[in-house]
Length: 481
Image (cartoon, rainbow, N blue to C red; front, side, top):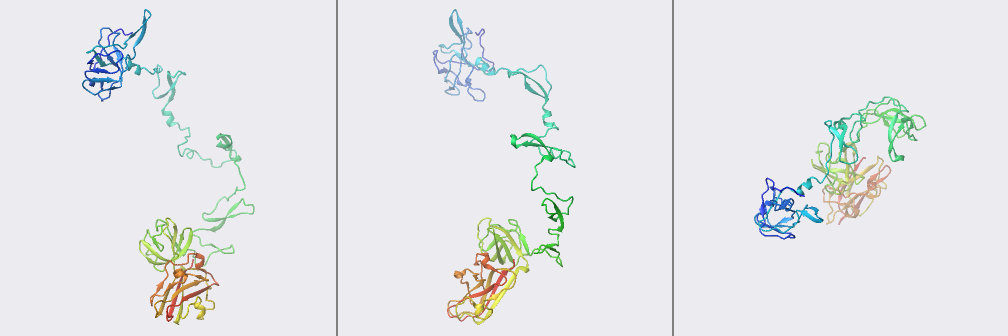
């Protein structure tokens, strides 16, 4: 039961009812709404008391609100809950309440004050009790099971961060910092997590580590860069062969399995590999051009042979033009598919192979696929007795053009396969007396461009209009891979 008059707190500003209200009214008219907003502009919803200055201390009524019709001036408090936190008790068997809802007349004072509603919020959680004394920096722990008593845990929090005797899951280098044992023995112990027992911690000895058919023993020492060979027939012992391997060695393996150091040194590759992305773009600029990311004009010239890996297949070509930013080639076409050009090398002069055939006088009297044989330049064609080569194109020119409207069409036949795919694989057309060259109209099957020892070259001639063209020369270009 309240036993003293409730006073307005120091910074509360009172106002008054502008009309009388009943005991069940949920809308209350007041003279000044700004009284019910704090300094931040937030509506004060609890701890509001009607008739806080009443001479009878058990009569003032506490209410809560949810809204107001405005922020200043006369208006209404809305969403009112009446008789909040009223004290209920019995007097002579009659239920009585201090602060009960009742009718209030006009001009009754009303204000937000410190009240039971405010203090209940502050006291809703039971307090926690600490010890009489504690060590500064120690971690606090619960004392008992009530959750309301704490004690000094006796462990300084600084010790958790500086314990040098603990291995941490997320800290690198802790094991590496330990002293290494120079000569481990089979009795030494290793910590493991046992996969057969839910990965619980366990220990094993080095001697108990599993071994199998792949266990190989090496020599006590070796020379860096030497090749490794088996020692004996067990397959479990290897040795230093004494034979070097790599850029600095001059010892090479013969086809019969023996080793030889060639006289005069040697061993450098005739191909110089460029670096994908750094030196060239991996996406073709067109079917016959490659974007260069570094200037290679000092190394690569017109006529230089190139080797490519395109769409996982090897292709060869001959450079027909080059600038600091673009390489143009003749040979098998590429595409502009993204990232398909994965390797590019240029060859030295030893990679260049050329063969020229000349057909004097009138050469196109009739269409033929065996011009070399027909003119007795070689039975069944020209017999190749050299190393395997890949043909990448040919050039043609005649001394006198066909007098008709259509010139002769020429193709190279490599081991029975048409090299140029132009004009339905008939070849490329003579252009007056100018040099005419293939481009990227070369047979797309690499094997069809290959000429090996014992195979034949032929020339196919498709007759022009009048068949009176004279003095044909055909120069075929190939790559020694």
